Image (cartoon, rainbow, N blue to C red):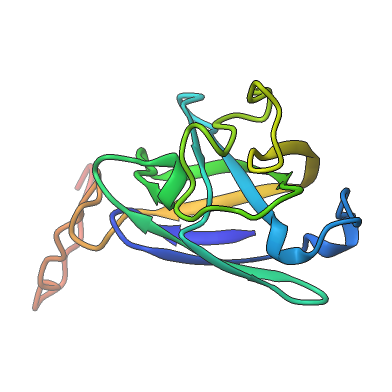
Length: 162
């Protein structure tokens, strides 16, 4: 499970290499497209991580918070807080990847096919992992806030029928 806080950057650790689809290309020719779906209102956001590293057993990466999300540079705005589902799609390139990604070089959804086909355009290979993510509210921005009161100094009994 990925854990994050609203209005902050967050780092993820997920397992991708065990389910890798296109093993004919190097890890430098792979990017991961995340699809975030909110459990409450079913809103969807897509994003490629701002930075990531693929290790033998796991992948670590970062998403940055911004009020204006951007799929290609890893900016997300995961509101409302609560539980989100995430799906991670493998996108691979035959040729070199030009960073930063753009709408002409990287698909924006798992169903998009870039035309005309070229070695410099990414192809969605398929789903490599999925899971749940909890996005907590940032301190001081909670929808429900409680005020703690001083405990009474004396007894506080309620008598009934006396």
